[in-house]
Image (cartoon, rainbow, N blue to C red; front, side):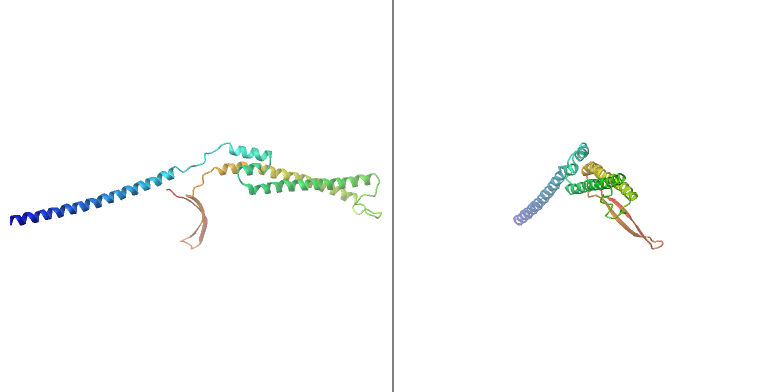
Length: 209
């Protein structure tokens, strides 16, 4: 009986040791997996922390404005906004073109008027009859209109030139701002619970991460 009891005791003891061993191994594996998970998350955080950001260059706006002042459109190329260059040259070119055209028209009207004052009737605006097709008064008005159009054309060309400089400067400023996806501006639509009328507006949202 004593031998049987001791034998049963040894079996129970060995079973308990086996169970403790299994539980210990499972706990160790679970802790190892948690440790690996934490290390993985830590690596992801470190990766996000090491994201490279372009340093702010305080001289970039001045450079862009200077480039556009020297050569129109060069500041836009410096800011990598190449699609703006044709617009700059189209505006400046149109102003110069109409200035030259109105200057030529002004010279034609002035020369014809001077010849009539000198007693000639062979200018292009007189015609073949005894009475001129365009009178002297109309030639004076035409000169005034051409002079006015000349001034407007040169103002337009200068305006596009100045806008080209200002645009390059402002674009270089805005280019260096870090616009986060957490900041958003979107339209807002709500119903008024009192009179059931719709309310419209803009909602500015900022997400804290």
